[in-house]
Length: 229
Image (tube, rainbow, N blue to C red; front, top):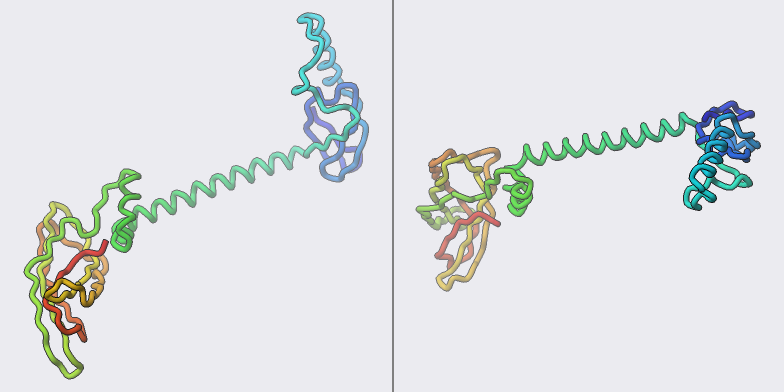
């Protein structure tokens, strides 16, 4: 049923059963309190309840469903406030969905770059059912040749190698690491090698690469090129 505040004339929605016998109500807008007599709907609800008691022998309504006592002040909200709250909740939910799908789209679009920068992220893509190319998988590194040269600025280590894609699909050019060891197998130094941006290997393609590293430590005889994990 609809009630109107006698002070500010704001309309409210309230179940008829709560006005059984009349009760105090408080305006949710201006806070005015007044005694509301039971309306025709409330009286009809009371009569229906009496008939139900006579017909089915119901003597007492369970405490869990009894209306609020008539001597309490019941605060009720305007219909427009309830509608506004519902709209706010719906807007927040739609905003969340929009942000989720935008973020998901970015993660999928940048899949190769993300995996290249952080290889453990491949597990996430596998979990959500996307085809994952593990960085460096299928890349063969062969024919490594090294040479030390003396220049005006000091010693330089030159390294050449062949990088081959052994898979039947394109793979991303991964970042590499060059490791220099001595005859005993002890590591002397490692250099990170950044991957060319947006460069890929076609199926079966081989790329010959050359690198130069300044001031290599003395005693280095073993060179290994790997994909960092």
